[in-house]
Image (cartoon, rainbow, N blue to C red; front, side, top):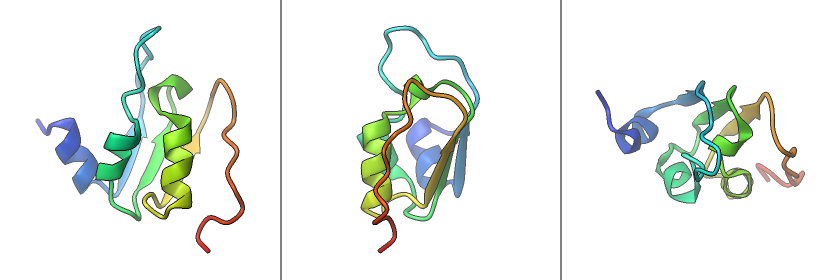
Length: 85
């Protein structure tokens, strides 16, 4: 079984399908997102609390993450229109 860091670094797409633990920190924050390939896709079909939305937006804006999609959330992140420019 791959460790999370190795999985993130080697994957073209990461899809989350697991419950959130109330009060627990996100499993994907800035350090984890930094491990992902710059053209990788992140799909969160689980709970928004699993991903640090601010870190995800920062990674998208900086070109360190190829794309992201999510199905539910506490809030929809504000994503600047300057992504990819």
